[in-house]
Image (tube, rainbow, N blue to C red; front, side):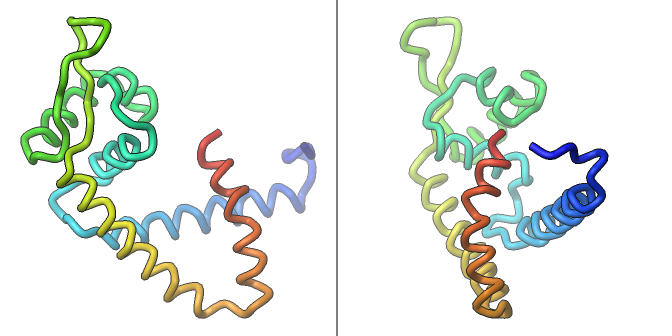
Length: 146
């Protein structure tokens, strides 16, 4: 990996990437199906969809929030019928959080809306730009999960 601090071109690329990702992320957040859910609540549902059932503590680590905050988020999602709490198979003191069918349907609708919005944006790219972006997608995915 190049030394990003001393390489001016790489530092500029990192700055440009940060700025673009932040702007695109903010714009994507506005493409929501259910305005009553916070971005954090949507993120928790997405994590459950990707990773399956988890304890509130595991969700807190994955979402980079404090456990008491995750407990509140899970309670809100449960009250909205989007997650259910079930006994932990090995530890009766803990609960497992899983998404409901209602959450699955809402996430699918949300993904479709956001994908359609991104598709519309991508139609403004030329073929070379689209090919570059298509090749960069797996790298951005990896970076997002490091």
